[in-house]
Image (cartoon, rainbow, N blue to C red; front, side, top):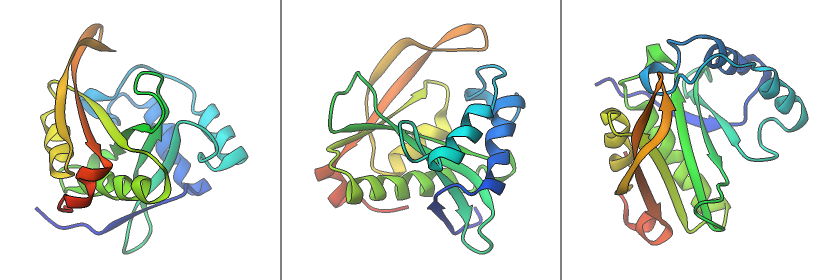
Length: 178
């Protein structure tokens, strides 16, 4: 696998094409992220207001180190389920850049960022039971599988099972980085 150097940074206006494609192209999100057509207007309006960093979900652009080209995003959000001190994270990498380890590195960078700049104790992610690539990426980032949520996510006309993965602040200190 070719090593790709990336970084995470705030979104810039030219990067918003990613949000437009995700909202209007069923193939863009891949087999696990498409939940139907929607407007990207809300993302564009939020970007104008707060660069997608003023409220949950918070979004950072994943960009190539060599030329700063946007290749995806990572995000984190507050959820009622886990309570204070916990963030749920997500990632989306553009289709032609997948299977190069970019999602793994991007999530690892986000974990480092959140533990360094917030008081969070726990970072977690859910992924569909059939999404083996994302499960492996989370494990490479130091996450551990905690359980199965049956019928948790509606996609493609059916309820899908999801796994929950998490890492805590003490575990982060000892993890290896991809």
